[in-house]
Image (cartoon, rainbow, N blue to C red; front, top):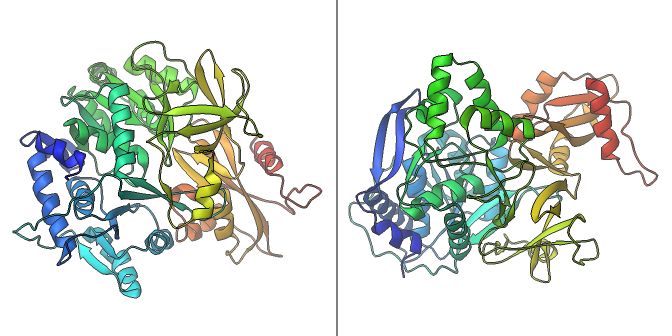
Length: 506
């Protein structure tokens, strides 16, 4: 049995699937790939991955490839060969890449030549098969295995409250449920054209944009990286129908619009008017950003709520009233409930933890049965997010744990960052917190107790941290303190640390 994603692609053979700019500076100079190209190249990659085997049998294949046709064909090739795709992040430093490769137990690494220098040594040290995307693919395609949709398809790494990221495992069946839920709710058709500017190691970019587009038989226009001017150039062309981004991106697009000439502003606004839907997610959307964007684009952004473990769970309606500050109601195929600390249902108007059930919910945390068991209560996934239902709509109140920071659409663990910071020779103790910020949602900030007679500048601290942590995990502000505030039990009181940052900036 072919995977439904593949079977559906065969119905759109000659249609454009992926469009990529040849040079990102000039977004009009594009190269188009059809669904036939996607099917053919992914079957060649699957053959290459299989070598002499009949089926990869859920072997993990880690891959690091910039957004574009090669990323998609590699992901599909892994799936068609019966493997589990482990997408790596293009901006991660070596320790983070190494962790995902080791934790997932990947046996193969596929890399774009740009990343050969960082990944080949890891492959050699761990004795893993290493493939460059520039290698010649076989002319003859072998018979590909039949892949059941109950099989594991994807491992994405997400920060939890317990330090190191956990591998979230979704099956082909979970992905299908996540995609069909959104296609039904947001009425995707094969005539859509969406601009893809989101990271491709993250559920928002992989599922909501890329896989939904390809499932629908639509066109996915992929930029290698976000650039506000390039994005506005594409919007000005007036041929896009959908756009999805995180609040940080909308803030940057607003800034670019404000710096444009009035003539260009008119073209920008006209380009937005041609779209049928614009979506914001991965972080809370500040009301002033929503209102400013509406005045520029004419679109009242559709906010939704989801996470790596569950796909999307709640959404404002495509048609009908959307409310700022709310994330709407449960999506198709998704059950949602709010419970108190005792696991009892709470009445409307009372805050409770969001719990989710349904085919969109992930299978397990990779090789971590304890964390998996702990994450569920009577078959419901416990999100750790607090919400309240008002007038039938959900409003997110924040994380139940102070150790999870939502910054620029990423969820990061304060404990993981602290563990790394404590390895700095000048740092004795530290406390990492999220401080509210209109652009980023929360900024990662670190209060530091330094070793005696030591000093540390933000610049030297950040340049050290870049070797250890993904850029979005690196504190953007540091505060040197004599001692960290603690409660009677000796535990650091993080709300007090947040207050220290507020006091220092006022």
